[in-house]
Length: 377
Image (cartoon, rainbow, N blue to C red; front, side, top):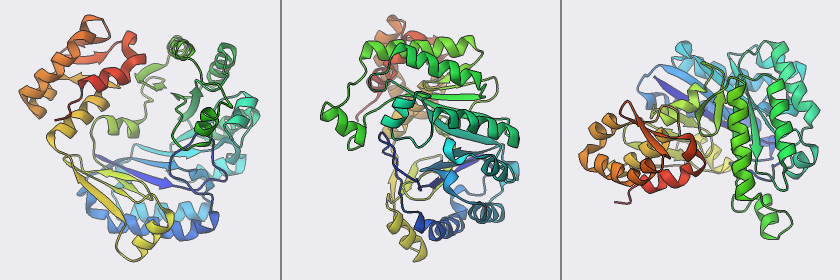
């Protein structure tokens, strides 16, 4: 099995925290969709005929596309790839795009999962983040998707925002749970270099959340969602039973995937990765000329080991130690276990059924744990 990721880079406006590749030039949309479809044709053989299990439309803002643009993309996918076996097709959307009419239009295509970027229901923070929607629009967006027939809805939340209080975060969690989404992704704000929020922090125009408050917010998140029946299956992801993101889980499990569009990455499931240029114009011109602007890299054993550590430990499935030894050799297995020893002793890592897991105690320092298990050789 394999997955396909399609990057839709268009946004009406740029959010203050975002460093994903995007553009606010809608006049390029028609030409871009043509190039995206051509890339799908050019790279038909990349997945070696593997059955496609998941397709994910990310952004940018995929909900900026209209019916005709979606039709062109799905016509190409259906013609070029074995997508009849697809179990999950996800589209990311902004709340203000999800009018009743747009949600109903999306439901006429093979989408069976929708991911809505809400981030917060607190109006002042929405304005600070330069989100286009209001809290009311976010609530209505979920309802519109339900009315259109979507039974697998994911929402994104963000915490650790400037001057965020416990009461604000508690209200965000309560409001999110009232909507009864099948999936919730909750991310701590990261000040990415060069973004507007990063500049505001640099200039001391906003106050960064303390580590103490961040830990409290994370504990509130995990405890509240667990009490509501959600499974904490990945550091930042929670779902109702059997509703985990199949596509994102494929990244964590090392399943091959094809990425199309500017800045999109691909992985052959073995030892090679490649990615497209992070430039809309260079991407389109390269595809149109038949010479895609892309880069490739070979993943040596140590690089693949490092990725195995990072991707497996962040999930509830953990790191199978037998697979670690069989795939990467006894030397790297022993190295990993030696680095893990202090965390096992402190209860931040545990071993169950010969599988290494980050414990609830270690989740908030998971980045440090995983970093200490990596090799630089």
